[in-house]
Length: 321
Image: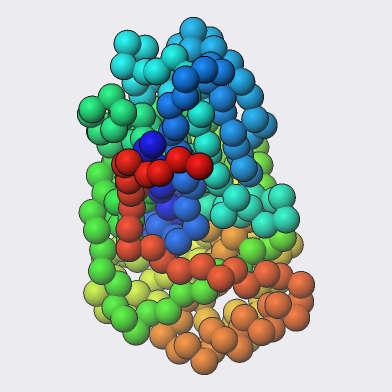
């Protein structure tokens, strides 16, 4: 048996701007997707999913002609048919990335691709390269910058720029908390609105956002400067949203941001926005705790979640049931 797990991620800064080549600051989080491979004597290929997809049973031949937008398609591109068994159970557990059946928006698809490809890579005797994982995930979800894959592989906090991930050590004085709006968002629809806006050519708000994103990653060694730069970035992200009408600041994010200004902390949506999860940052832990209590009273969800130092992990030779 082979078990691989990979963390989800949250974008601290650089969403949308990263698509223009600007750097993003990305954190892996301690909610993981786990993939377990257990070869069997019969039964074909049995995919058992918790949280991600419906269970299915298929044949090896069907797996190796599957389109890249499916889980079998990811398998097909991760291992050669000659190296794959005829019968196997593939278990994928992404339940950590959901709450009450709603996606948290923490990169579960990238974590799934990373864990699945890593497990089958071990089976084939060759771990997947990061560039291969970028391409696998782009085929699976129809594009993307690759930052979520980089975070799942590397763990910790990274600076991501032009498909290059560089580990970042944030000051111990900087504290994070995470807030779930209670609703998911359709990332593809938000990105389509962004693309349509960008094609119209009035890109000055995006250029200002990109400059602010670079300022954030350049200030990570200094707590006060980092918080100031992140606060400015959050302000520009909100103005960018107003200009583009993407809907990054959905109702939950707007309420959390309003409360953050009262409690002296920095709050922003993570990633595409709309719904999903946001991050609150401060050097004052008491201020974060007070903010958490207030947003919880308003019906938002404070997620028990932390930055994960570990990226993808693989274990072999586990006992079967």
